Each structure stands twice: as C-alpha cells, then as structure tokens.
Image: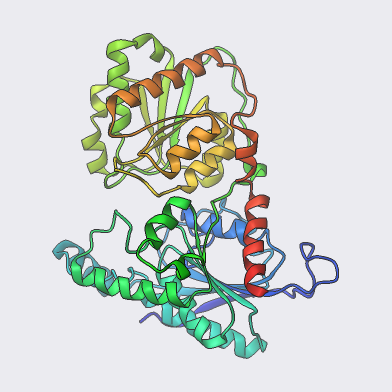
Length: 436
C-alpha cells in the first residue's frame, strides 16, 4: 500500500473574480488522479474546467512517481484552487513485476477492478480526512473525474462521508468500453462497482451523447435521467501559429499516439488508393505523424510501402508545441480503429477544433464522425476503403484550392460550443443544479 505523502498547496479563497456579486463561492471537492503536470489528456481537460468555474475548489490528485510530466500542460493549473492535495502513487519494484506477470498470464481481477490505480484510493481518502481535520473543512459538492475509474471509488466514499451532492464525470465508458478485454469474473466485479456509482451519484456526466446511450442502456430510466453531456474544451489563447511562406509543401498533421487497435493502416491504405487513381492530388503533400507509435502498430501499418517522404514520423512533442504545430498545419488528421460505432470523443479532436484548420477523419460512425461533419470537415468509416478514398480526395482538393488561406476554419457555432468558457459555463450549471 502506498504511504501517505502529499504536498499541500493552500491559498485563501474568501472571494474570487469568477464569483457572482453578493455570492460566496461554493466549496467544491474534486477528485482527479490525472492533473497537470502529469502528461495525460485527462489532466488538461480537468484543469481547464476547474479554473473556469466560480467555485472554491479543493482538489485531490496524484503525484505519480515515474510518470511523464509536461510543464506546458496548463502550467497555472493550481492558481485558481483553494487547495491541491497531491497524493503519492509510488509503484514499487515488486508491484511492477507482479503487474507485468499478471498481464502476461492474463490473470483475472488483478489490476482491473476497476484499474491499476485502485491502491491509490485509500491514501487519497486519508489525505482528504487529514485536510478536512486541519482546515475544519466541509464541501458543498463533490465531483470525481474518471479515467481512471478508481477516482469514482474515492468519490463514492466521500459521498458517504460528507452526504452532499456528488457528480461522477466519465471521459470513457467503464464496463462498456470496447477496448477492455475482461474475463467474466472481472467484468462481473466491475459491473458491481459501476452499479454502485451509478446508483449513488446524483449526476452522471459523459463526454458524448453516444456514451450516454451505450452506458445507460442497461440501467433504469430513473438513473438515465441523471445523465448529462459535457464535451471536452479548447482554450483559444494557447495556440501560437507559426508563419508559413507561400509555395511550401502542403502539410497534414496527426498529433497523438498509435497503439493497440489504433494504427496508421487506414491512412496508408487510403494513400495507396489515391496514388493508384489520382496521384496528382498528393504532389507536394506531406503527412506528419507526431507522437509515439508502438512497434506493433508501425509493423501492421505498412508505411514502408509508400513513397519516401509522403508520410514522415516525428517524435512526441510537448502539449504546447502540439497545439502550435496543429495551428500551423494546412490540414489535420484523425485516425481511429475500425468499429461498428464509436462513442469516443477524443480530447485531441477538440484540440484540433481550437487550431481552426480543416479536418479529415478516418473514424467509425459515431461521436467523432458526426462532430467533424458538423464542423464542415471530411469523414469516412475507417473500415470502408472506398469511402475513405472519396473523403480524402475531397479533403486534399480543398487544401489545394485554399493553400494560402489562413482564415479560421470550421462552423463558428460548432466551434463556440467547445470553447473553454462555454463548456465551463455548462459545467457550472450542472453543479448549481445539484446545489439547488
């Protein structure tokens, strides 16, 4: 069990520039394992929400030993918090070896109920208990942010302790996540944990309507009425656009990782088809894949079969640089694993919206596909070769005709709905709904 070792950051919050005149700021207790500078997509999204709401927020998050950190990811994340409790999460050598063995042997339950961060819940609760005792503190409302789903187990205990309204926010499905390959016993245990959270939470918040439909289909209409949709957001002030000289090649960028079932293969197959039928569309075009690619994903993709220079691989960059590179690109790319339907709305796509550059999505029908189309972009099912070719050719033709056009791209009403201030306003409304 990790030892209790948290760093406390406390600032008085008697008033706030975000608080409405004549009102005191409600006390919000937030739980999020992921928080800057930990370099998880969830970290930045949670920080962006918390810093834009007029609440006095105390946050319990993780100080994860050995995890990658990105100082450019919301560097002022603590500035608007009443207190930040960073609870140590060390992974000892014995635990790392045991986790590796369990994964190799595909053992049930181990590290999967709900996830490998379950051992963080007890020290997180102890940190809150110590803080509340020392500060004579009591929250008005609680919110937990998963992934990881262990955060919701902390939220469940805090709900039972303080008996105040609790919102459970899900970036991904829990037991319905198609990327989880759980055995029957592990699934049964997770269903039991998920059911406790769904039953006890006063509000259930998801990032897409498709996720609500998937997750809540197995529960009663009464529980479904607790569900709300809150998308990821972007901060327009974070984008620094590089100058691009006319006459340079057309650059299409993908920023993010490839691993597991998500590989560059849909892009490679699409480019092969265009090369065989409309090669002129690819003259002077370069696709850049920026980020980590697992060896298996790279081997499966077939990139080596393409002409040299058409697709280039670039190493991972900081969050700030990824936004700058996206804003400086001529076009942006989303590639997802084939599926019948996808409920996932990745934060990367919302970052692309902030970059305001044309988007091509090779993604299954579902949340991402529909958002790209509403923006005015091009999307095709990543399992439909003919559709991908048609969409990519239309995308490339648009880029060719608008090579030196640096105007903001994307339907303005759609873009506005994903701005940080708008999403935070929706989140605040949900919290005030719970407060009555």
